[in-house]
Structures are given as structure tokens and as C-alpha cells.
Length: 171
Image 1 (cartoon, rainbow, N blue to C red):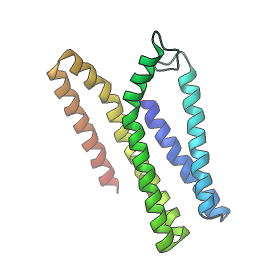
Image 2 (cartoon, helix red, strand yellow):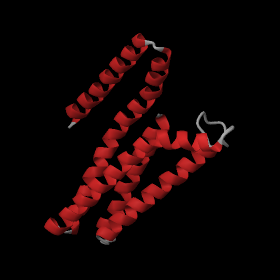
Image 3 (spheres, rainbow, N blue to C red):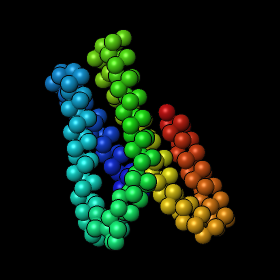
């Protein structure tokens, strides 16, 4: 969960920085915004590959034991919801960019990108918390431990509402 939070923050900060470099300093326009996004995602990809390649991490790349088809089926089963989430975000961003481009020009697309990155930065904290809570709830569900499920969900709600409250106070 920490790595998920760090990766989200690194991506957002790199995107901010390179948006500033390409848009403000180099005045490249929308192409610069695309390059900023590409560079930020490439850096995050490399960090993720390094992280998951280290056998010392609890979660790392490894060969599946036994039936390869069963492992592939399980990967697709668990990986499909995040895949659909990313597809939905991509489609939403594409539509928003097209509308903004036709209505208000390249500057509006750049502004939308910056605002979107701010949103992702704040959502990173919430995603990190939910990413940390999901395996705990799943394990407790498997144990049929309703008390642990309720306690974890209560703590998650308190943390996220507290995080949102802090953000609102400083806004």
C-alpha cells in the first residue's frame, strides 16, 4: 500500500514538473503535455519493474507453480476490474480532452491535465488506504470474522473522512 501511494505521488509530481517544463518554459503546448505524461508514466513503470523484480519484497515476480492456465485465469480474474477502471479513466480523459480542445483550445486541455493530476494526488491517499484495507477485509471474510471486517471498515472510514477533513481545512 505504501508503494501504491508513493507511485501515485511520484507520477503526479513528475507530471506537474514536466507539464511546467514543456508548457511554461518550452511553450510546446499540448504535445508537451503528452510528453510530460509519457515521461511520468515511463518513470513509474521503471520503478514498478525494479520494485516487483526484487525477491526481498513480499509481492514480486515469480514463476507460477503448477498449472499455467489456472494461474493465467486467476490473474485475469483479479486483474480485470483494475483494467476496466483504467479503461474508463482513459475514455473519460479522451472525451474531456476532445471537448476542451474544441471549445477552449490547448490551454484548457493543459489546465485540465494539471487539475486532474491534483485530483490523483489527493486520491492517492485514499487509494493507498483502500489498497491496504482490501486484503485485510478479504482475509477476515475468508475467516468469517465479522468483527474484524467491521473494525477494519470503521477504521478505513475514519481515516478517509479524517484525510478529507484535513484537506478541506487547508483548502
